[in-house]
Length: 593
Ligand SMILES: OC[C@H]1O[C@H](O[C@H]2O[C@H](CO)[C@@H](O)[C@H](O)[C@H]2O)[C@H](O)[C@@H](O)[C@@H]1O
Image (cartoon, rainbow, N blue to C red):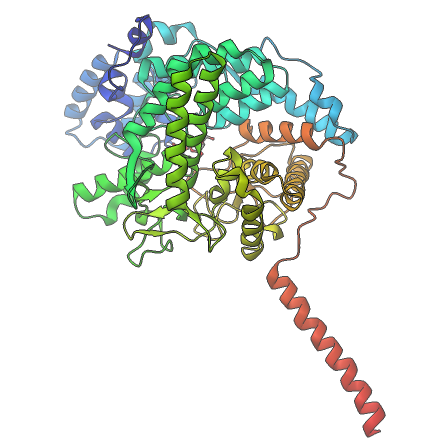
C-alpha cells in the first residue's frame, strides 16, 4: 500500500511505522543502483537536485530501462551517458509544485501597528509579502500518481523555507507557523498543521522534510507545539482536542524509537532507521565515508550522519566524539546516536505537558494524570542526567564515555524555553545560567550567539548563528523571569532584529543563518551554499518586531554587544601601559632632571 492508500483508510489506526518499501518511489529516490549511478556521476552541482526530479515513467518501468541502459554500456556509462538517461527519464526539479498565493494573506496585519520605526515597519511589511513567494501548492497529479514523485502528498498548500528547500521541513514549520499566525494567516497555518496530522496518520511520524527520501528520520518534534500555538492564537480548543490521538501517537513514536538509558534513567537520542548514504547528499556521504574500511563501518557512519540530520543540526562538532572523548576532530567522528541531547528531552517533556493540558480541556482526567506522570518522569531524568550544577547549564550526555559534554551549544539552555525545570528554582537557575553566559563570553558577539565556539567549517558550528537557536535562547531567558535574565533576553532579541535588518538593508535578502562575528553578516560553510528566503528567519523576526516594535529604533544601527573578555584584557593591558608611561615620564622629569 502506498501513502495515498494509507490516507484513504478512514479508521487509520497505525499498527506500524512505514519503511522504504511502503513508498514505491523509494526504489528510485531512496536506495539502489539507479540512485547510486546518477549521484556518483556528479552531474548536478547540488546532489539534492536529482532526488527532487519527477519520473516520466512508472518506477518499475524506469528501473527496467535503467537495467537495459547499464547493460548496453557494459555497466560503465560515461557521465554524459548518465546525464542523457536522466534527461530521458526525469522532468526538472520542482515541476510538481505551483507557486501559491495564500488566500488569507493580508496587506496590513496588526503586528505592523506595534512597529514604530518607519524603516522597521516597511521591513515588516516586506517580510509579510515574502509569504506569497514562499507559498507552494502541489499539482493534482501528485496525489493521483504519487509513485512518480519524491514529494510526499499533503492535502493543503505549504509555506516552504526557500532556496533549495522547496518542500516542507518539520521543525522549520514551527517558526513559520508562529509567523503566519502573527501575520493573521490562520487558514494557512491550520492547513500546514493539518498536513502534519495527516502525515502522522499515514506514516506514523513526521519525516525530516516532505520527501520520501527522508522516510527514515524525523526532526525535533514540534507538532504539538504548533497545535498549542494555533490554539493560543485562535482559542479554538476543539482543534487541539480533536488532534489528541495523533499527538499521542507521535509522542509514543518518539519514546518507542528513540529511548536510551543513562545513569539508570530513560532518555531519548536522535536516530535513523534507513540504510545507506543520505539520498539528497549521496556523493558527499560516500566520499567522506571512504576513510572507513568495511561496509559495516560505513553503514554505521551513514547512520550517525542521518541521526545528526534528524536533530536539525547537520552538521556540527556538537556530535563529534573522538578517541579522547572530546569534540575536536571532523565529520567522520560524528557519533550522534551516542549523545543524549538536551533539547530533544526537553521538547518531549513539553509535549507530554501540552498533551496533558489538551486532555484537561476535554475533562479526560485519567489521561491528564497519565501524561503528567510521563512529563514528571522525563523531568526527573533531565534533572538527574543533564542538569549540571557546577557548570550552571544543562549538558548533553556522552553514552560512550559516560560523561557530560561540557561544550557550549544554545540547546544547553533549551529547558528554559519549554520550562523543563522546577519553577521554584528560577532564581537559583537564573544566577547559575547568567554566570555560564558570562564565562562563555556569549554576550560579546555582534551578530548573535554562535551555535558552538568551535570552528570546523560545518554549518552548525562557529561562527554561524541560526534563527531557531536565537529564539530558544531569547524566549528561554524571558521565561526565566528574573530581571537580569529578562534584560539580557531583550538585548539579545533586539540585537538579532537589528543585525538581520542590517543584512536585509545591504542585500534585500533574508538568510537561513547569519554570522556571529559580523553585525549584519550572513552565514556560510557546510555542504551547500547559504540559502535565502527564509521561512524560519522571517517567522522569528515577525515575532520579535511584534514584541519589541514599540521600543526599537534603527537610527545609528549598532549591535550593542558587550566587549569580549579578550578585548577587556587587551584594553586592561593598554591602560596599564599608558599609566606606566605617564607615571614614568613624571618621575623622570621631577626626580631625575
Ligand atoms: O541537504 C542537506 C540537509 O539539508 C537540510 O538541513 C538544513 O536545512 C533544513 C531546512 O531549512 C533545516 O531544517 C536543517 O536544520 C538544516 O540543517 C535537511 O534537513 C537535512 O536532512 C539534509 O541532509
